[in-house]
Length: 167
Picture 1 (cartoon, rainbow, N blue to C red):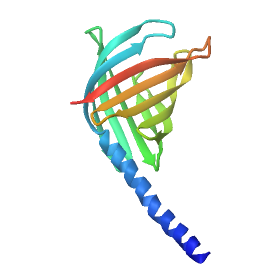
Picture 2 (cartoon, rainbow, N blue to C red):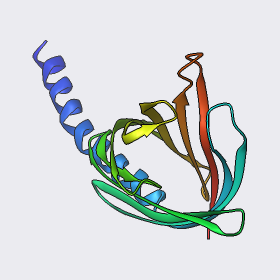
Picture 3 (cartoon, one colour):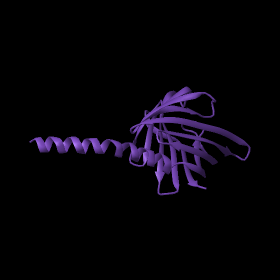
Picture 4 (cartoon, rainbow, N blue to C red):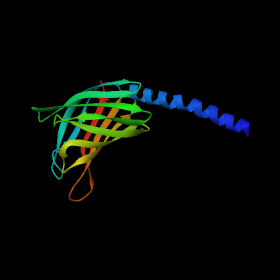
């Protein structure tokens, strides 16, 4: 019985640093220069606009930041940035988009995807809540999505869907 308890203690002590290392490794794996594009919904029930985007992201053992911009219709350019801190697989931080005001992010990572609950600084698409995901796709891909709720139907609507490639 003592051997079993000692074994469990050793295994749990060894597992904790490994979890932290995998988080740092994951963050480093999505660091770099990215280019791509996708679609952004102008309003719930409205049409999507094609965008081209570029982004630089930086990572440390316990933080991740991104700074970029997207261009639509040749003349419209909007910047965005985010900065989050990791504690284990839990994340919190801020995102600043077209409004220029910081919105709060809080979430966690599961596999290759960080999922955030977003509280917008201003009302967006009928409320102040959304979900944002940052997903690592293969070695050189990144997908960033924002999902809002249609206030009239209650259904989830993808409002931003960007496919980025390491450049």
